[in-house]
Length: 219
Image (cartoon, rainbow, N blue to C red; front, side, top):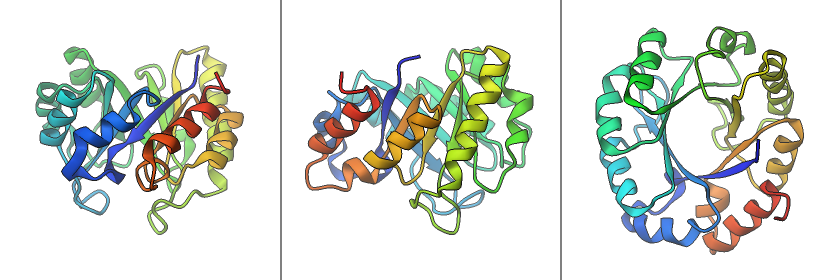
């Protein structure tokens, strides 16, 4: 499974979204959109309308990460907006099985994510149902700051997937720059999500190029 780089637009200048996307499109394999409702997790961020705008700006894959209490309610809009992949948070209070089935029926790739406060065992019931699992590497208390304990959790997630012989991607997000990307890849990650490390710099194209070189082994 060839590692890939995903650029998180939450850190981009949304007033110049299309321009920002074009700056890094050569190096990013997909674009990641954190949809947050300020209930499951703060803050209130962006939704399907922005996904639709992003879809018009790029032919790269678009990944909607639903960090919301009722993800099933957003699926129709996300599908219409043109998302290619949707990930559901295991911390959501509503049952995920119906949402996973609905997403599958729409033709989207499907994933589940879990934060540092959620036991790894929580993903076990969903491994046969999804295409990727996302290890969130920063805590609620310190968003955007990579937690060293995440490396152990990435290794455990990779082991759980490989033990079953499943073609499931292990994605990581949360405070990941060049150094963290290397550590995550070494632990078994196959999708690196980076936001501030790309769009929070003076030269997003150069930052994306440097991250892509790490992710793809200099290829």
